[in-house]
Length: 282
Image (cartoon, rainbow, N blue to C red; front, side, top):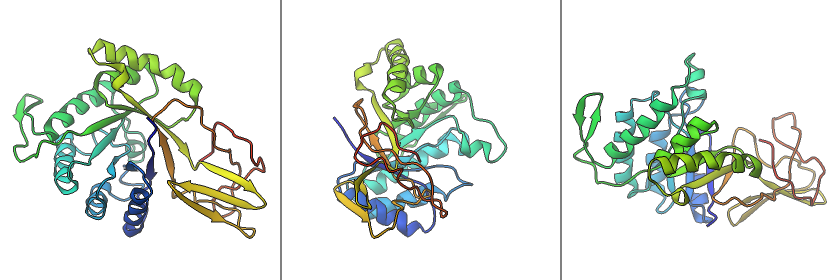
């Protein structure tokens, strides 16, 4: 099954992120993700509360958080609280902590620590008792909603961990060859944990997928909405407003590539009209 989501940087104003979330839901998107890097962009959990209050169906979550920007018990509590607000629509993308850690002069955590955090957050957010470094904890007020956990992974160790603990794999590379190379490691981890590999979904992201119709028309497909720029206006979408389409299948992408930037930082067409390519720059 192919599903679509939109991934946004939490740039001001918050009202725009909320409006785009409503637009995504209205046009059939299933997921709304926000980049969780608290120095580079705005804090995401307050925004999720507003998105939840202004939508009714779309799932939402960080893409991705990490185990140390916030204590895992804080993350679990935030997700459980937002699951009450949203009616159980919260999901979580998590990684080792790249931009969020490096921008403050710290290094990412180990894969083992990330895997541990996935297990703890899943159980604690759902109201189950956990052992937190020797102390028994439980969010007794949790409504018991399960949180989908998606792990961002690239190397063999992280990919195996994904197979052991995650509902889905996040790959920021819509390249069928890299996906083909990666999935056997996920399968190994799933089999090691006694899980079905077939139950693990894959999110591959394509930055600013665009198609070019010729004659100066540049289009961006946002769900069922067609946004066009014409009359010599060559930019299609600002780079700092990254719209990402996620694909839950292994099909060959067929979006046309773009190349080069305008002075204002927006991407422009490379003149390769009408020829499907496998990647798009972002």
